[in-house]
Length: 88
Image (cartoon, rainbow, N blue to C red):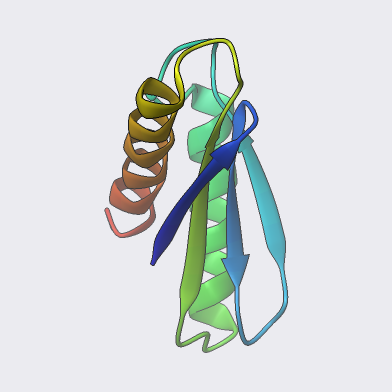
């Protein structure tokens, strides 16, 4: 499940364990940095070891572009996190 909102980050929450992980993106980008990939990898490992059944991913963007553009950027960021989360 994904959402979009306004800020320069993405957020991963594992529902059962209540853990939350923040992933930051470079300005106007939806590609994951090396640090972001490590955070997503840790979130995936924690979810697997904790038997989590659901993960909530939220993508954000700042307010420097139009609402339509930022919504699309937020969705691309959430999808980038989702792809990395289920990669392995």
